[in-house]
Length: 224
Ligand SMILES: [Zn+2]
Picture 1 (cartoon, rainbow, N blue to C red):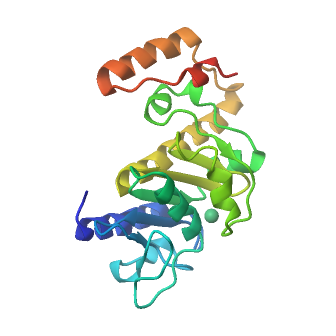
Picture 2 (picture 1 turned 120 degrees about the horizontal axis):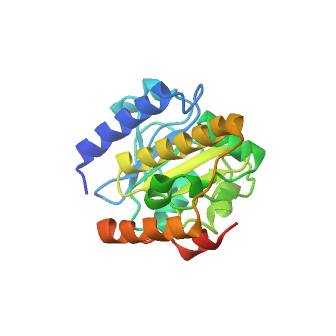
């Protein structure tokens, strides 16, 4: 695991990137990471991600008890803590409202990942969680069916959440989700995307296995 110093630096850089890429508006979005001491460091409530500095970050225990002497954790800290408690392998969580991914979430449609070989290999299916009132415990509940087997989830009528082994991995998943959503919406102007055939996905899965030791799940191949 990275040092506390590196983790803080990475959170601040990712916050600035989220803002620069337009993945958040006003004070939306939140980023957190697991520290070497097992606690969670999160962005504070009500701060534009472009303005986040190291000293603004707030430390809480994985049960949500405030460790920092001051500061208020992100309003979505409950969702972050739920993911850390369920997934010991996850060390970072990014939540944002990128325009195209959130368009899918608002239209209540999943992104057709079978049209994107690299998304299939890197992320797999990006499920759409049931609607949950933002910043309530409902958001964690809505992730329950997906948290174990997915690292990128659309939050219905709200946005997206991605997570991974470190802050950059979680952030890059958010970028890939948004990029795929953007391409799919752009392709609608060209009569829509065309998905890979089961044979093409099988071949991709074999290459993914030989390169990364990771297969594409049969449930994706069989899904309509
Ligand atoms: Zn949100």
